[in-house]
Length: 124
Image (cartoon, rainbow, N blue to C red):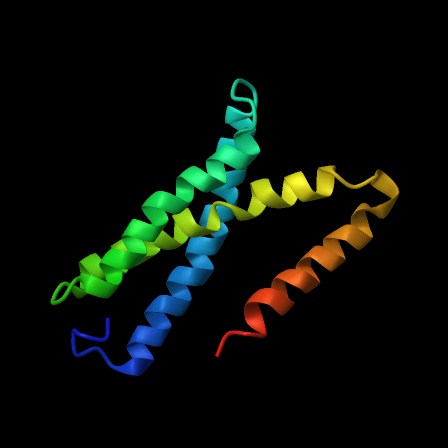
């Protein structure tokens, strides 16, 4: 978006909207596909997030390198965000299922805290 003479406000709005909406869709899609594949693929909860990262990384790389096609960049960014966020539900299910039931609520809280400490706090 930075090469297409798009204002910083518009670019921020597009990236923010793609992240929020793509994050919601990606989380649901990752969960549904991992649940479905878990019936016949051993380790599907590990495999599905890994497989979604490949097209996600390619899409996000394309959004940085495509010039002159603002609409196309927005669509590719949205698809990339969906793919990148598809890891969240399967990985959360794995980590929660590895904890004894009486400690699962505390485990969810600690997991979210660590995600924010390791992700949000160190970002600019």
